[in-house]
Amino acid sequence: MRAEASGIDDAAPLLHNRDCFSARTIPDGACGKRSAMRCPQCGFEAIANAAFCSRCGARIMTPRPETKHEYALTRILPSWWHFARGLMVVAGIFATGLYEITAPQGNRRAGLLLIAGAAAIMGLVHLARRYTSWSLTSDRLIERHGLLSSRRREMELADVRSIEVTRSLLQRIMGLGNVGIASAASADFMIRMLDIPDPERVAEILRQARLKRLA
Image: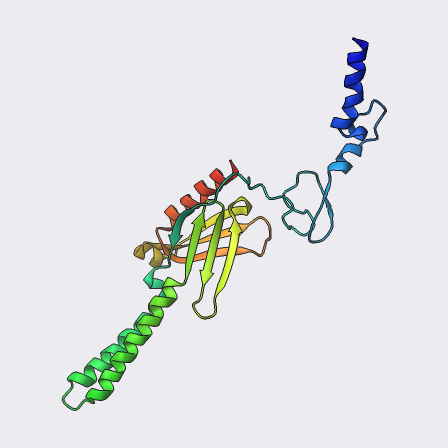
């Protein structure tokens, strides 16, 4: 029995940290210092198992399990109301062109050119709406803007700090609203979904996806 006990005692230092499991007295915080981590951005020594740096707010740990696969949940586009100015310009040019064609003293050629210009502007408005979107996956919220000059931003669902829905009187009449998503990683980082249909439902989808991501 002594030989067996001795074998177990000899194996303990190989399986565990000798400083944390030794029989001698350990100063307070000795084990904590061993498990502390440094921020990859500012080098500040963070608390063990901290997700964000307490100095600069950068992410230290990524809680995303490697065994889980990311999948798409929904894609959100702004309402046509968001491009109301462009649509009004299209309507004005088209009406002017139509008048030039139908008026007795009108210039038919100029009217056709105006209608063609209105169609071209309408195509640009359509592309602007198509290339402005927010894609929600099981792990991230991805914002995309622009056709020629594009911008893309991402926010991890685990980093979402708050979700805010705002609606003006006109937006309430039109069934639209704005959804703002603030990040816990940085106070200045926020994704805003402007003039989207059914904002309350979109906010609830975001909340459920975040809870599932943190589970």
